[in-house]
Length: 144
Image 1: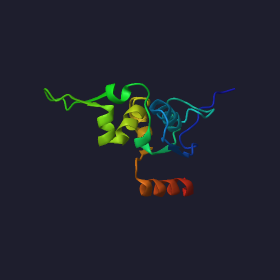
Image 2: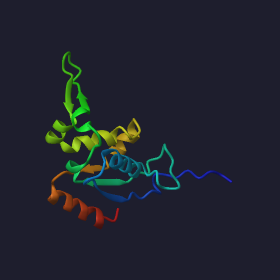
Image 3: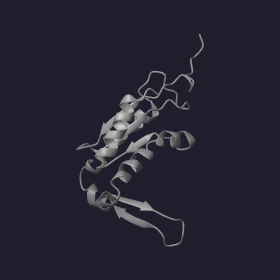
């Protein structure tokens, strides 16, 4: 008996909507990364694209435990001397609340071409009820 390897053509992606309101950051990020990769299926193969589309709403209301709100730092660098910038979670939440979930989910995905493909299927919204409702309708009525 030969081992069956699923092909990309045979996979039909599904659409999932996650609500991040009053949920812990790591729990939402883990659930989203598992759905993006398709790890819940019985035919999961790490090297084959079997991912899904994920829409996360209410990203600004995601919770963190402990003192992470003031102590957790995010770094960015433009590769120029002296350009390292530090920002706490609370200031990043005030400036770009979507970026918190984006960074945590991106770091859970595989590095390389496949991880970037999965990340393009992720849509995160905070406070945009009109945009979110339009995308939810698109996801629910799409026959992909």
